[in-house]
Image (cartoon, rainbow, N blue to C red):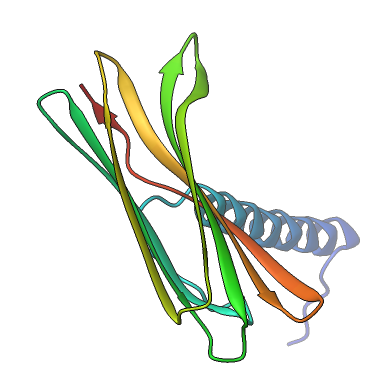
Length: 144
């Protein structure tokens, strides 16, 4: 017995598929963009892994970042920012930088902090000749 599918039913099925697939892509993009802590970098050519961390003990905040570049890359430039949330915005209270040609680069810095919510925002640029790649990573937030 042969059944005919109406145009309306076919349209509804196609529409639902588009909605489901579009939602999946949007969720994936948000997850990657806001992921905190360590990132294993599959989609980059010159960066193998990158992590950033924040710890607060007493009045001392310790910010750190560890970057592993691929051997095909020449060097990395790291900008690490300690940020505090005020009035619903993240403001940089201290910034540190490091340039390195080492395969693994680690940076750790400290800063005295007062009450509030803090995070570390790290920007990494990896250079190979005239080409470069940039990633941005965030630590988990910590309350002091």
